[in-house]
Length: 114
Image 1 (tube, rainbow, N blue to C red):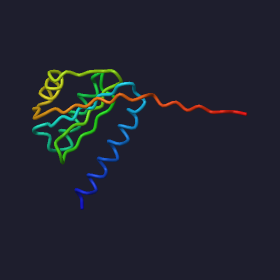
Image 2: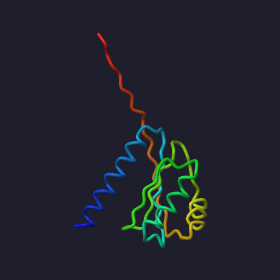
Image 3: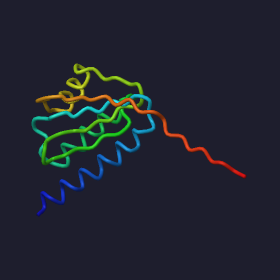
Image 4: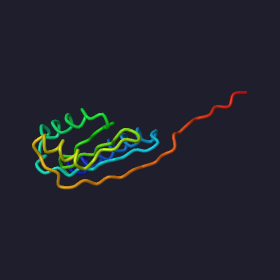
């Protein structure tokens, strides 16, 4: 039951993060599998180190999956080498990095007044 609740909480948080990203022209999402990230203290250290990077818009950690989901600012990039450096300087190692880009039209609302 706890896993189901955690799963849905993660889906809701990631959905909220991605909804924020919908306003961007081009947004990149990185999913980083981190070896050794097993507790909240570990995750908070990694989050803190990623948040200092100018390209990072938001970040979410999943202890259950040992992953970080990093959403970059519009039209920003972060190299695999840089991701590895940040994780390794935090005392962990990268097991894998998946990335996806989303190009989204900016949403505008027009109001007709009569």
